[in-house]
Image 1 (cartoon, rainbow, N blue to C red):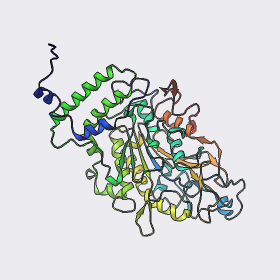
Image 2 (cartoon, helix red, strand yellow; image 1 turned 90 degrees about the vertical axis):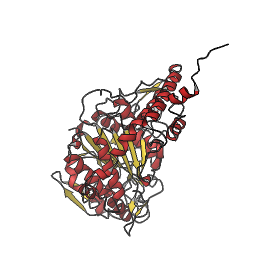
Image 3 (cartoon, helix red, strand yellow; image 1 turned 135 degrees about the vertical axis):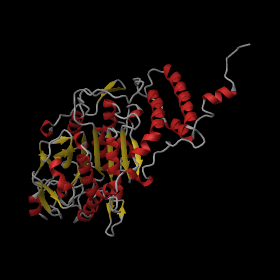
Image 4 (cartoon, rainbow, N blue to C red; image 1 turned 120 degrees about the horizontal axis):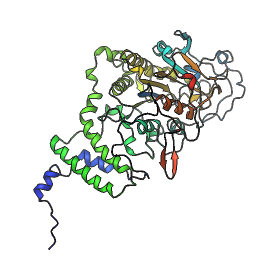
Length: 480
C-alpha cells in the first residue's frame, strides 16, 4: 500500500486559512491573465531599481484633457487668426480632422492676456492656471499621426497606435520599480471612461505587475476585490496567502519562461498590503476644509476633478510613480456637470468654457499645493489632450480634430519655468518650428526620470521593444 503522507482534514483547513480563500482573492485569481511573456520576471517585479543616471523627477501627474482641447483657444495665441476671421485659410485641408471643415478661419471667441514675468499669453478660460505660467514649459509644436480620439490617445500614451503595447506609466514602473511597496506604482482616475479605454493605460506585453490601477469617480474611487471577507481574520487571510504563494511558486518553478507567474504572485501580496495603505491614501477627510475649498471641492461644477487632483497629490506624496487623471466632463448652462469632453465640433465657445470651469481651479490648486509642500521639486505635472483642433471652422462655430499641431505644458521638476518651445504657423494650424513628435516627448520624459530611452527595452516575441520604438530625441532645450 502506498503512503502519500496526506495531511488530515483539520491540518489542511488550518494551513489553508480555514477555507479556500475570500471572495476577493478568488476573484483576483480568476482575473489573472495567462502569461505569454518569454522572459521570466524577477521575484519582485516592483522592487526599487536604480535609474540609468540621477534625476530630479520621482513622480508624474498627467492631467489628460479627454477630447482634444483647441490650442488656439487655450495656450497658443494667434493674432493673425483673430484678424482673418471668416477669410480663407491658406493650405487648409478639409480632411485634416475626422469630418470636414470650411477652410475659413475661425477666430478664438475668448479674451487673451499676458501673465507672469514670462508674459505668457493665456485665454480667459483659465483665470486660476494663468497665475502659474512661470512654472510651466509650453510645447507648442506637438504633433502625431492619428486624427481620431481612441487611436490618438493610444499613440500619445504608448508611442504608436497599435493595440497591445505598454503605456508610459507601465514603462516607468518597469524601469524604476515602486517607491512604496504598499501601493500600486501606476494609478489612473476617470469619471467618464475615455475613448480608447483600457488600451490607453495598458501594460501590454509587460508583466501584469506594471498594469495601472483604475479608479472610477462614479464609484468614489472604490478599489475592487480589496476588502477582506468579514468572516476571516487577518491571521486567516495571511495563512491563505502563504498557501497560495507556495502553490504558485511550485507551479512557476516548472515553468521558468512564463514571466507573468511572478506578477500573479506579487499581485496577491500587493493587494494584502494595500488593504491598509490604499484607503488611507485616498481618505480626504484627513485634509483641512481650507484644502478642500482650494481644490474647488465645495463647488459642484469642479468637485469631482478637485477630489481627483487632491488624491493625486496624496498618492505622489506616498511614493506613487505615475498618476493620470482623465478629465472628460464639462459644465452645462445651468451649472450642472455633464459628459462633454473637450470635443468642440459644433460650438467651441460653449464647449471650452464648460470644460475650463471643470478643470481650471483644481489643476491650479494642484500646482500650488505641490509647490507649497516641496513636492513640485520631485513631481512633473503634464496638461494636454490627445490632439488639437483646426484653425478653420467646422460648421459656423466649431472646430474639428487636428493632430498636426497642438500644445502640451509641463510644470515642476526638471523643466524650465515660463518657457515656450516650438511654434505652430501664424494661424496655429500646423507645427512648424522645432516640431515635437510623441516619441520625442516620451524620450524627454524618460530622461527626466533618469532613464535612457534607447536602453529601456523589453524582449517580446524575439524583439527588443522600447517605448520610443526606433525614434525619439530628448528635447534638451526645455531641461532646467
